[in-house]
Image (cartoon, rainbow, N blue to C red; front, side, top):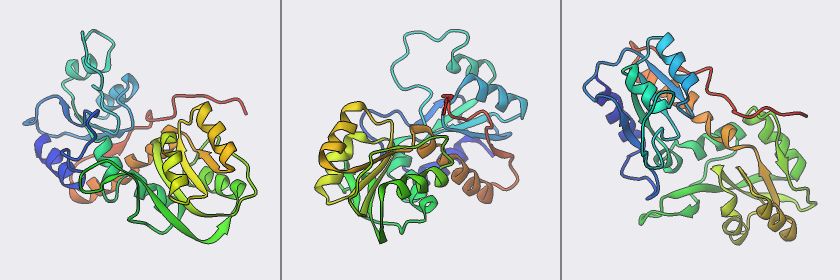
Length: 257
């Protein structure tokens, strides 16, 4: 089996043509005709992930975040792109196409939260209405702290930040990664809460002024969940191939609590 077969499978799952204009999802490093010896999944292709892939004889790394995003003016020793090439590894990255596809990152978030799936898009960006995030209705209203605790458990977070409010929470927007900019959209859609990550200070202030429940479960924890999902999907399809999630795909931050 060649790398191209895995690429085509991923393209069926999350078409690379459906990615945001700023993105660089796709086959980024390597040889499409190379035989696949093993597959390593991760959120980011770091040097630690590359070492783990090499140690486990995996020559294809599938990541969520593109290993080449901003234009590179040079490729030198110690850079992940250099290390990929040096070790004859291949890299496929599924970023915003996986954010927006059915059974993508947002749907995985909803499943882990045990929320009913929704077709209502929070931020449409494509001509057909495809976009980021989902809006869903809870069967029973909850409150801010309970929802934050639910997120901490669902995404196995070290810490969850949230705005306290007495407002009953019934309609919830969910957006993986850095979705703080969608707060006005969530509020305009009648949501009582937004679950996302990487929230900036000014967005917190906006949420407080709106008496709105804003929950930051972290960029890593709301997106690394894609790795286990894809590992399961790929393992069922390509059951004769070693497929694993990198143990080194972990939150880059440490916390004092």
